[in-house]
Amino acid sequence: MAGLLYFLGVLVGIMATAMVFPALVAFSAGETGYATVFLVSMALGIFVAGGLISGLHGRERRLKRAESLILIILIWVLAPIFGAFPMALTGGSEDLLIAYFESVSAFTTTGATALGPADTLPRSMILWRALLQWIGGGVTLLSIVLILAPARIGGTPDSTLTAIESGGRTERARVGGTAMRILPLYAALTAACLVLLAASGIPAFDAVCLALSTLSTGGLAPRDGGLGIYNSMAAEAIVGAFMFAGATSIIWHRMVFWRRWSSLSKHREAYWMALGVAGLGAFFAVGFFLGIDGPSGLNIADSAWKGAITAISVISTTGIEVREGGFGAISMPLLAAALMLGGAGFSTAGGIKFFRLGAMLKQAHGEVRRLIYPHGIRSAHFGSQPYDLQLMKAIWTGAMAYLGAVATVFMLLTLLGHGFESSLMAAVSAVANAGPVYTSMASANNWMAFGQMPQLDLMLLASAMIVGRLEVLALFALLNPLYWRS
Image 1: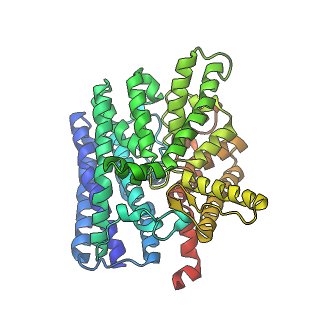
Image 2 (image 1 turned 30 degrees about the vertical axis):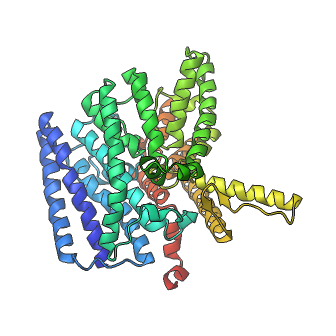
Image 3 (image 1 turned 90 degrees about the horizontal axis):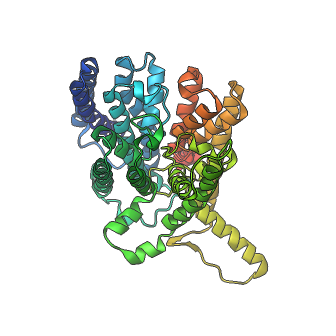
């Protein structure tokens, strides 16, 4: 228990320290009341975190496997409570449950909002949501590398972890060493995105919030209307490129940074993801060119361009629109399938992930070949990732558990009175951590927006967001007595 509380204290300390930035923005914008709330919340967080860290220092021993899973569940459930304090106390949300939903949505990089249009929110709150997304993205990467992959949750591969995981003797040294291998690259990509957006003419505040949302694949934008309001192809290209980067593996990023070209050629998940973007982009391009209710006025080149950026937004589960209402340009089943597939493993994107789909297709192809060539020799690799029967069982179980989570949330929403289509898209968007997609579809189809939903519905969707971030099976593992005995 000491180790769990120690790392929770560290995270609260990081979140509290980050509150200084929205406090400064509040002062500069004349939002004195908001600045006071952020400073009070920051002081409270630093006090609590300081007490936990100093009181438990030296007791953060190596966590057992079950303790590690308990830790990430506590992080995703409890950290948003602290993140919700400024939202509940500043008048941006009169109800703590709505503030908690907003905080969970930002921290899990889902991007759903119940606070209303961004144009009506104070700048300090917009920045705080963006920071919560970025911090949540970093926590996502660390939880995958340190906990989910070593435990093989859902078949997450661990064969390449030696390149990024630190082998410190204490848990603090292990977590700290791994963070120093991952987070500087994550921060560098965010900074590069920020600089390029500012150079393209995007206002500085918007560039900061967009960069934080893009690399975390969160999708909460500083303004309503998507990227189209900036009327800048350069900004669209930059956001599209960094959304793709955010949805690719952090291991792939390190290979690029260290110029390990031979390893890059074998790490095929990013290339399959690019092909997926191209295919989905073609569907969006046709939809944009033909228009939903008639010709859209876009020529072939513009349709192809906006189709590609929208496809990246969907595959990465970011949900930032390049054309308002653009997600409705393709059929809803195709949109839902693309969201559930998601991006690459070891990334901040949601979804089942391309490596799982590739392994399942590889196994299916092998089984067909077995019928034709019973004694043939078949490859047991998908790119650089080897797989065996146990790994495939975990992958199939993880994929089915993911679909089961979507189906469960979908059925519960229908029982709560939502329509079939709106329930399906809300369930998919929540579990895939792609909230802006539902927001866009709700606006176009007159569905109930997140801000109009009862509190019970919001808590159900917040739970679905957390389950999506936990790879679903982490919960099942903790509920299984055999897991505790192993």
